[in-house]
Image (cartoon, rainbow over all chains, first blue to last red; front, side, top):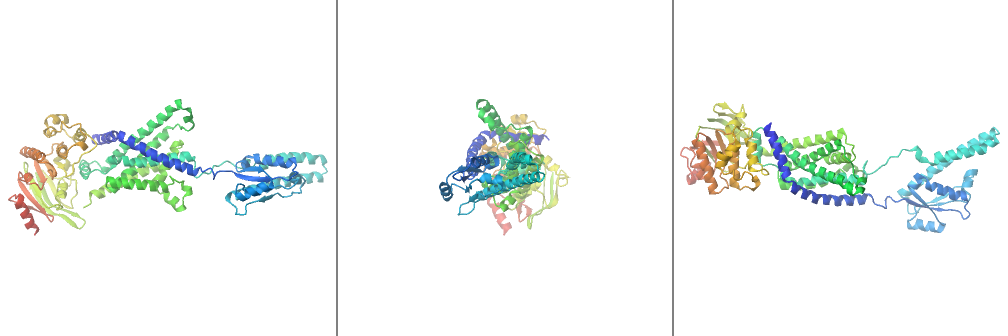
Length: 409
Length: 228
């Protein structure tokens, strides 16, 4: 047992002896990762793609106050407001806007539009889309209008049905009262369509915001690239040391585990230190508290396992390559490739389906997932198990690889 | 002391050792010579227990080491061609690791034992990666002798070392043999072969004793003759 403890202690000691070099290299890689993350965030939050639709409303020359009120009411409804901006303008300006692409659609409101709705005449409003073809946004607006028309149709049917019932039973006073009540009821229920739906945010980055998403993939990329600076610690040992350890009945897998523990502890300490510094900086810069996440104990355990998992993979790559320089090259190439397939640069929902399927088999996918759970304090047992499983698999494969290299003739 | 009986080693279809047999007594130095790639290191790896053999057996003081591999670590100190050291650690840490299962006292040995004899006490706080090749080899030998084994197996200890270092190691090996230790050595150096008590030639997997212990040109001629 003493020899194991001593070997573990020496590996931790060797890793911490490399601390200044690792800090320096990590800072360089962090800058690189920050630049990649910054570009990615800019790409995903492109302002043009998230802009609202401008809809031109052309009112008749003698528009009654009901019509103007109805459109201002409509444009203030939350579901409509999030998608469209109604702009009242002349017919000529609206058509010009349609031609130059600044307007998505034009609504031509007929005379006595609201009065005709009330009295049942129902003169339709004309909606004009650009000739150049219907875009996704135009279709979205069309759907919005259709659902609004259906709502109003249902409201009218209800009101007229009550009118007919009142007339049939000769309740003349009831017609006005019931119309008033039903109008209020329909407007509050039918037009406020949000009450029918629960809010579900659908994002290319899953449950994470774009910033959180790039922080996660950035941390994983940083850890993977840091494997390059740890190559001295994780490179294959000379065969003489492996042979000598074997003679002392110390399995090479124990040496691998101890090496990974050493490097993991160094990076865990660095990250904890950075975390504590950020926590303390809140006192001086209170605005940090808006983005600062207080991690719980489970998240810290998750963080340790994440680092351990990543460095298990790094060690396996070095053992497989059986050379420090080839290992560095292989690690760099695989890190970029695997992270891309796992959706670390461009969210996987935007990648081809085949790439998404391949990504499900890559450890980097689960590293990013675990990282996301860590920064949102939602680490699950499943993620723990998957990460530990991957670590075990990599250490096993590294030991097997070493065995093959040792027995090569 | 050591009896090696008909050991064979195959790597796939390659027969590296073909029923090799020899013995070594206490206080003897056995040299194994042969061309590069003839299987000398494989033979030493088998004798030290770090490589498995295909057939045969090895007895240390009459105990079958194949059946009980612990005998290898109890009896043999092994110095492979490369140094089995942890480069990132200091000389002292490396020694501590190899001494941790030994009954010997490292601090005492750093004053009067093998490490002191090789001048390692002066370098004890140096990281191994900063040591010269000679000092590394000295440290490897000191580590191999941590458990005070009766047999020392060295695989080309003088390779790429300067004359002073070679002489130093040779001088120590002589004293080790004089004190009853058994040395098995592979080498291409005449100076390391001339103090051996017996010599074996390994060629085409066959181990043959060279009774006249030839060195220099004579050895080369013998090897060519054997090959031809």
